[in-house]
Length: 43
Length: 303
Image (tube, rainbow over all chains, first blue to last red; front, side, top):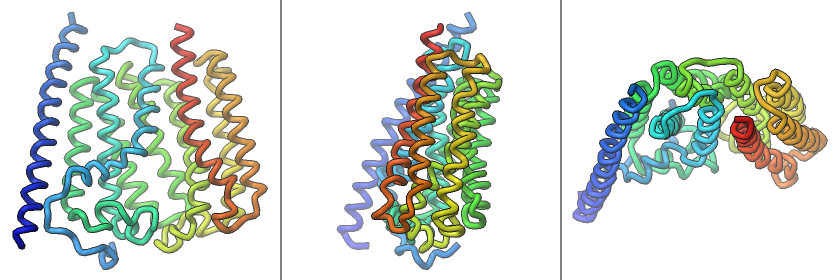
């Protein structure tokens, strides 16, 4: 693998990690909202 | 599966944009819209957060099915101009990543649907994903000209899922909406396959225009349009929707029939002479948006 390829691998890994972090954050918020919504309905 | 036609697979990790492209976001819009309309037409309230989650799950499930479809059909996609630039045939990612992504997304969407709404909606979602991948993609698509007729059922599930997410059951109206999309799919896809016939022929996909010719395909389009129009209007006389929906569905269906008759009258065999087919294809998308939009408008106006 050339240094250029290695740079590209790092770039892709960084961008995928950033997207995954954002998605995980959204998932946490969504699960919290679902829990609150279900508690509201059951009440 | 023939992998000789694929460009050599990359050893680089897939770019997130290519993973997104696997989900066919443009196709997803119609799936999401019909699912949302099924949800909004249901005769019960649903918490906005749960409604959002249900629609999100329908979108993710559709994306998973699309990714698995692209994983299985990478060799076919490489042979067709329309699909050759997709991430797998273009060699921008390896097939195993697409498979893992599709399975992971599918399982996640079903589990989230079950947890957020109910397990009937989750089961129908799971069934629709499996139907699209196993029945349409793996079994029928390469074997029979009726592929799109049976396979069309996969795209007809979203309003049923949306309805089930709210009510926890499936009644006559969501089944009629299912029937409408089921009968709408053949004219919609056959109109497209008429003007991209050479693509399908080159890839050896037995679409109706490839197997039976343009004339038979045009007759079938016109034939399917009639029961489709009946299914679209049916909720009105059955008392499941009001006059707003009934009149809109009747008018939109009448125009669909008119355009299908123009297709029937067109003798062209080359794509350059297939304006009526292109018009019908474009209108068919608008038609489904408009009919489902009218249903929601009707239910909310009556409410």
